[in-house]
Length: 469
Image 1 (tube, rainbow, N blue to C red):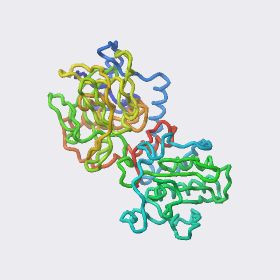
Image 2: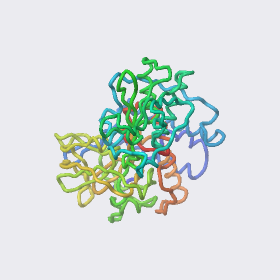
Image 3: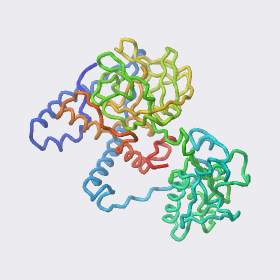
Image 4: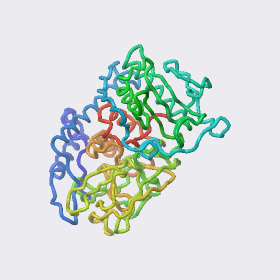
């Protein structure tokens, strides 16, 4: 249960040992001690499922990905200021045009995974009219056939995404501008409960009205951050966004602050009260329970109300987590099969999850029997040295938004390295963290990098909001 944790960033060792000093000598001894431990495999049993290890190809992909991350950190650190460093230009991302009648994400527009529910029509006399803001961007052509300026009115989130798309259009087709044919609708020209009535939807074309460009225009709208994009007709593309105050607008991956974890001293503690260095119950890659350090929160929001999936088991445990958070599950056949991490929104009744027993000496597979949603105030995303955490007796990943737990864990290797060195140099007693509320800067950077390097299907549609909305 309390064996030494493996060195979190082993391929940095050749660079580190080129220097002298007692800390580095200790590091070499530590690594040599834990290397054998980390490569000792255990045999799965029906009572002791294991977590699925990455394939050699996956491991290679992970190493390449984290190398790119480290390069981005180095260039940012050595350049002048917080920019990209050395004035380098990013290679253009390959764009796959949407097919006619295709929509992304592949769910209905007014569902949690897309733009969310309809919240009521906005009129010029309603209190909510102040939610709309005019868009006077000269790089966008507004049809405004009513000649009332209504097409220019939209929510701030919609305005931000539209302005971003306008830049992409001019970069993609020099001399061509983005054209808006429909924005906020005050005249009832759309179907009932249309998001046009809330200023959350726009219909767009290019200024040259070249229909051969519309598939690519749809893809550019997806990349610009619209929450739902539909190649609706040969005449235009329909785009919409989440509501400004929607619990779905900023989801990410978190647990409620009232959820509890188990500490090494046998007590339980609310997630919101965790301090850096607390030893919490987690699991290693073989499914063995182990106590390890809590490092930090990659997202910490004590006030916002969010929607959580509540997953209950036949043994009575239940865990609440956001739709984009990863949970370890197995199929509904044998309990001895390997467990894999999937989004909470993909968990189904009949899946197996791992829970800790009363003695906390092992993890057992139990069956999911009920799933429902519930709102909670406050949300926290803890990171541990193992990348896993047992919350309310159920084993979950520390990661979210990206569908690959192993890739996410490797991407956080610099964070674990920094914590390991800090503990080595300054001690590992729990300390009150000065971490500010909100998404951690490193997590924001990884998300931006992920949207650049990874296919959009690799990211949950309710990924974190890293830009003001």
